[in-house]
Length: 109
Length: 109
DNA sequence: GCCCTAAGTTACATGAATGTACCTTCTTGC
DNA sequence: GCAAGAAGGTACATTCATGTAACTTAGGGC
Image: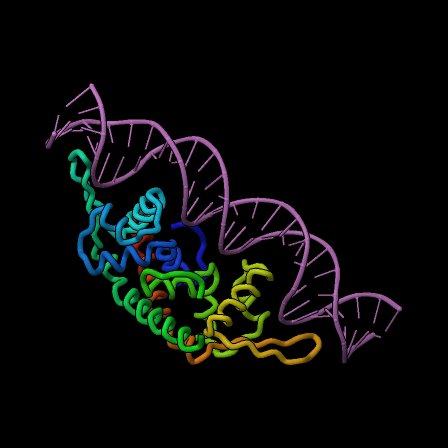
């Protein structure tokens, strides 16, 4: 953990609020297992370095599992841990709210 | 709205992921109405400028209401909009997860 | 007349987060 | 023996979010 939190929600936000973390988690929810390259294709605008970093942080926080196959070329698979799956309901609510927010904003324009 | 989103969860994260926004929303959930100074006391480490900015952004996104009383010295009250209240369940889940994450991390140390 | 008050604003500085470009690895297919 | 492939690492640059410090406003209490 990183610092002093005055409210438990800050913990969750710290863990989830990277620029790409939410989307990564959502995709892992749907697909169970994804390789690095597959995730990269799903997020066309993320850079290699940043994607690696976001995945490492999610791993360090215990949300995802990283399985390396000692092959060449390399093969690395990512999946949600049980612990990460405990965020499923939250992530789904956030997606739903986001969808309705988009619709709301489009109505007013 | 700010940019192209590839997934609806990005919208919610954009709206909620300021450094102080989650906590502000949680406090407004509990207290109904808070003055600027009260919020500031609840977040002892936020700077004046940043707090103002976060509140303005939440207002612009329709989550909170800002009521100015034309008095001197000024009086400004903030409260959740109905729309902001639709995030209640999400915020509560996030708080719960955060609490259990803290407990989990403390066990391993 | 002067200071205090609450909720700002402004100009400037800093740091963290993210991006770009290029290097590495070893094996298989040609 | 050369290139391609997947998943990185590294050095450096840039951008974005926050922070600091000082100024503003106008009425009430002294």
